[in-house]
Image 1 (spheres, rainbow, N blue to C red):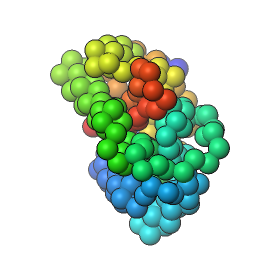
Image 2 (image 1 turned 60 degrees about the vertical axis):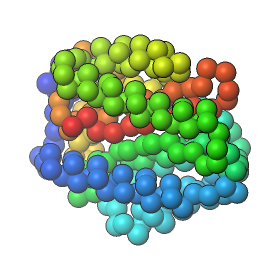
Image 3 (image 1 turned 180 degrees about the horizontal axis):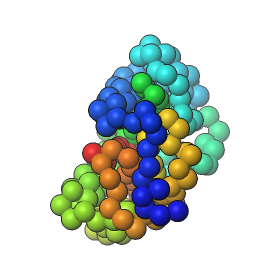
Length: 219
C-alpha cells in the first residue's frame, strides 16, 4: 500500500470533527483520573471509565479501555494486565482510551501519579516531555514516521528512560480507520499528515518495575 492509500479517509471525515473527538476523549481521561483513588482495584477503575463515557454521551468505544496500575504500566496495549492490582498510596497509573464521537475516532492516553514517589512523577512527566519534543520535531522538520520514532528513542535515552518500540503509533480517521490497514506510524516512511495519526510514547524506568504512557493526535 502506498503512502496516499495509507493516509486515506472516509466520506464522513472532517478535520474539525477529529479535533472535537480528541477534545472529548481528553475530557474523559481527565475526569476519570480525578476519580481514581488509592485503594481502588484496576477493574474498578475500568468500570468507572465506562460510567464516565456514558455520562459524556460517547458514540461507542473503538478500542478496549485500558487502565493500568503499578507494574502493569509496563504492559503494551495487546498484553493483559497481571492480576487485578490495588492502587497503592504511592503509585502510578495510566489511562488509554479510543472513543468515537460524532463518527470520528478520538484516542488519548496519559499517566498519573498518586502520593509522593519522585521517580514515578519524573517518569510520568518524561512521557509527556518526549511526546512534546517529538511533536515539535514533526512540525519543524516534517520528518517521516520512522524518523520520528528514531528521534523519540534518542530523546528518551538522553533523559534516562527506555522507549518501548513495540508501541509506535497508528492511524485514526472517521470510524472505522481500520479499513485502511495503514500500519504503525513508526513504520511509515513519509511525513504523517495532520489529524490522521496518533503518536504514542511508552517509557520504562531503567531499574524499577513501572513505566509511563502518553499519546495524542498529531495536529
